[in-house]
Length: 127
Image 1 (tube, rainbow, N blue to C red):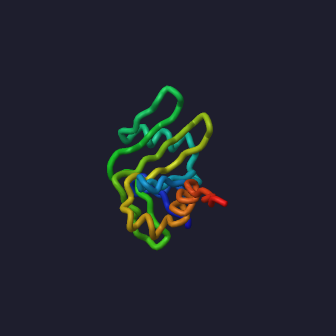
Image 2 (image 1 turned 60 degrees about the vertical axis):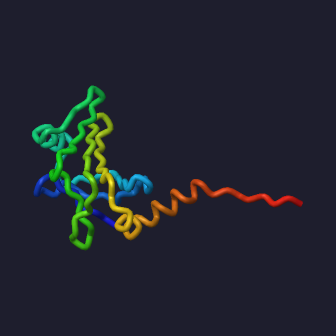
Image 3 (image 1 turned 90 degrees about the vertical axis):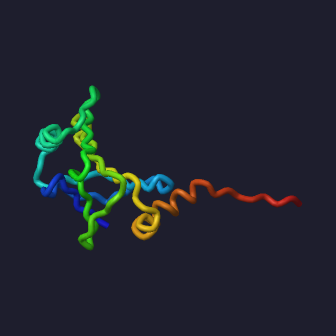
């Protein structure tokens, strides 16, 4: 599914939210920017109470600023959303934190299955 990513009311791009951490209710993914350069995005992030580290990564975690919209039109909500912008890599990512488990199961079953598969083991029987 392709989710729309907004800063305030402006759509900045889309993401597949291809990564996740099911126990924490986290979904994240690379943002494919819409007609906006990474430098312009950086400037906007710094105008809205973002933090910038010495390694060139800017984080925007201001409540209500970063919004992630499901293809059906509803906002994917959790405890918060973060945009990480890395000028050095010329990439930016979105992360939604603390998604309620019922919503997570509906939208990100593939992340749950991948997580469970990480802990599978082969049970050996005694002969």
